[in-house]
Image (cartoon, rainbow, N blue to C red; front, side, top):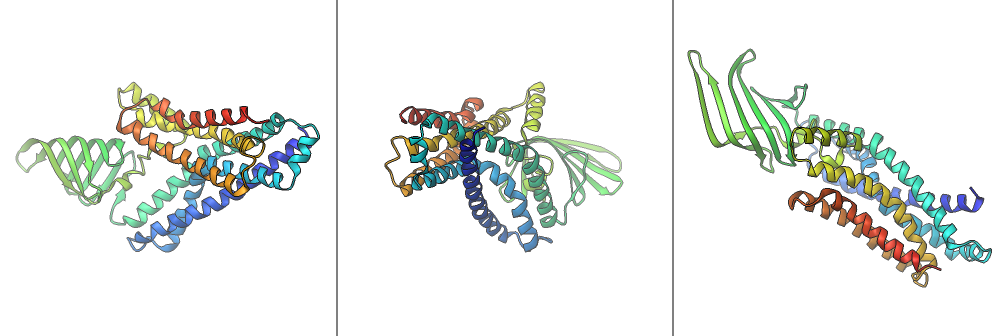
Length: 355
């Protein structure tokens, strides 16, 4: 690799790291402010809120990396253009394609780093942060272990699967009259939890009560269960799809397919992670037309504003299609790749017009 290529790579990587530091700091500040309403619940303190915020920063960095790389590449190459360094490079006979190749290589290195963070660093830290917060804010509820089992007073609740933020399937409730006496067993095919987490609407409810002398069975289409167990507590064993690493998502998809269960949300999360990582190379290359192509006549402020709009638009489009994949039952693979494909099309069009 030539000295010039290493110089371009170092410039893009250093500016991207600077932008990432700013974005993560701002987002961390907002997250810490959001935690203020939970401070005082149970043993959850300001120090716990700060720890929760810091542990979630790698996940935020993973999700914001395409925006950070786009802005970093724009700032880095823009700085070289302002210092007339790019003019000297072009005058010495270096082609735009060679500069673009070095920038793309910088994006590839950042993409590999992002993949490592998203697979091995962010998920365990975020899971630990979530566990610590739930244990601190829910001091009167205990985690029983051995799967999705939680203890709520005299009841033990078992949840087999999660289909959404507030939707669960295969719910069983075991009530004990004393630690060694089973008083009743109840089951429901599905449970919908209210936003506050206090009431569970159980559907196709069946129960069996064990009396001193007889056993009584009953059923109803719907039953309300009031409990202190909220969806956040069940996150200990039912992480949201977008928070799981790719390996775990793939294993979960295969398991759900083998059992004939819905997999769209998990497929979207899996392919979206891959598409977001690949988009890092695309957004790095997108900065080249801003300094060499039809956008080079714009001022640095204008170029940065356009970059911000493109980055935010890409981020919002990802979140929008995520909802569409789940709500409208659309093809999750196509939707996951759609933002990256559109960005690649735009980049290819602009690069093709660059001289």
